[in-house]
Image (cartoon, rainbow, N blue to C red; front, side, top):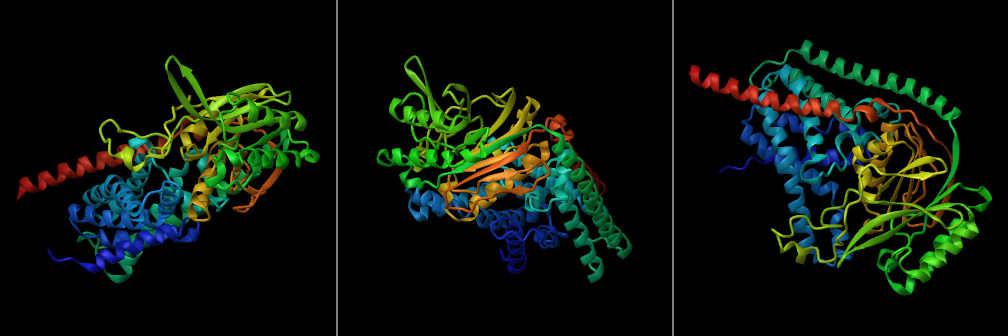
Length: 522
């Protein structure tokens, strides 16, 4: 079989351009054009060939986007470099085969006219993004819309459509640009001529939609700022201890780590915070169960005389079995434990090993993985007559978790994490970008406390406040508004994304019916 290198190279470039739109490179403008080369290579090819090109595009994108998994597996998973690279390649290939390649296949089958191409490409893209949020436990890491997390006016639409609305707008713009390129070069789309008037009308529509989104953003920023000015307020401190991951669980360093967190917490006393937030597993022991380190922490809390939210592991004994949890404890100024949140969405192959009864060899590959039990989805913690919504690390990438907590009354969102695993790679920056959209979707302040950074605050319109650099100890205090308004997105969730999934499935079915009719007529 003859290999065509031009299409191969083109879709690889397209995948790399898309990666460059995300942190750490962060050239977000590329997202609006990165898919044009991919679309060009899907023109007038069979669905099978589109599937293959989708696989190559996806592998190029996911390998370059998630490269930081390799040093994590080598340094902290103690896996050989060759095996870590192989696992990353396998992961990228699975993501491509399950999500990107079917998108390319279905779109090529259904979008065989310029009009259908323009209308269906964003629908198929959103459907694929949505599937990635829940299929096989979900991995909605850096979906297309996340690339615009710093574009304040554009992200305001999230309080209606969520991240998927922005993904659809970007995909529609890419499709419109492709039509213009075809019209200018005189090339057809799937054998059908692309009229210049139609192509430029499509581009004008895309520009108009972006403009309307911008106007909506301007209006909503002003509205939410007014609500925030009149809302009750609280002072919150986030602590960044910058504890080296290799030392974190060493008994010899345990006391020093606790001392550092207490010292940083007590340094905020002049600002009189109402709540001090420590990162995920900042207390590197079983809080309450291990008496000496617990007593040490409680003494510091009593001295600070305020509320603390502390990340620590927990366990509960049930008969002869113990269940382990990745947890956050809310402790009052008198050292009374007011509540505990247990992480509800665990990291596959990081906090538990799915399918290990069927794939026992995975236990060999991921022998350092924990075995945690999931907590209750949507649980909030009572604090000063209000409710807090907590997400631990990986949970922040799932919009439905924060949305459910806000529906349950949370007036402040808090995410605690330990990104020390990823060093100064793109990993911590990408993880932070995902948190921004949770604040805007639900119109809540989001406080982020990360062991090695990035810590800080995101206001209800997505402004980034008091951010800390990576790999530095820090304590940041901010007075934040506590809003209780419910957005359309909070109330109704991913209706738009679900509709795109249904339309995509219907379009593929209709295309198959049309194809059979044509074959019969021959």
